[in-house]
Amino acid sequence: MKTLFELNPALDREALAARFAATGRVQIRDVLTADSARELLTVLARATAWGMAVGAGPEKPRSFTAAETRSPQGQQALSEAARRAEEHSAHGEYGFRFAHYPILTAVQEGWDPGGPHEVLLEHINAPAFMDLARAVTGLDLYKADGQATLFAPTHYLGHHIDSHVAEGWEVAYVLNLSREDWHPDWGGYLLFLDEEGDVVEGFRPRFNALNLFRVPTPHLVSYVPPFAPVGRMAVTGWLRSK
Image (cartoon, rainbow, N blue to C red; front, side, top):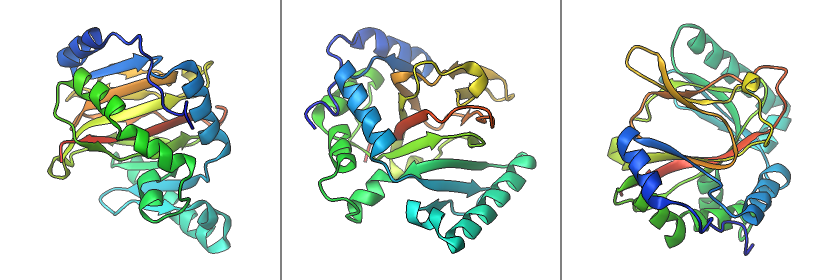
């Protein structure tokens, strides 16, 4: 696991900090060394038991484990949750559906002690990454949570702002390990909106690219159409001040 999370030493932290200061967001390309990015992609693609995350309006989001998605009862519950999410989205309300592996929960509940996801969470909270995040954002960040996410065909994350300020959320992060040939027609873009709903900036899912942005900020992940390939994988979460 030596190379699982080794930062690129050539990052221009001053330029990245200036960009973040100007807009409240930045995409850091080639954030990891090439070996680290490939190893992390292998963990996501081959060693992750993907479950599903589904949300519908103000209801508490549902998280289904990989085992639950394979059982008849779990499939029925997942289908009903997805239907409710689509109903809310059809009325312009918040909804989402995407594959995920809740790394923090898995570590806390001992799903795979000493496994690669536990090691990954340790790296995300280690001084090297946290110091990079502090240098770029200028914020006194304390710790990070995390989940692995996979936006496959028909998945999306509706318009929302991440307003959990009371929980210490300061910055959202998305470490993309998407296919290098990800095409705009395949969706899955991280889009930022103004108060009138216009897109003011969007980040294409890129391999080995870290997105950082202040919260609360209106944003969404655009719908991945049925013809898109599986390959929009990332590690996501929030950097906290407490």
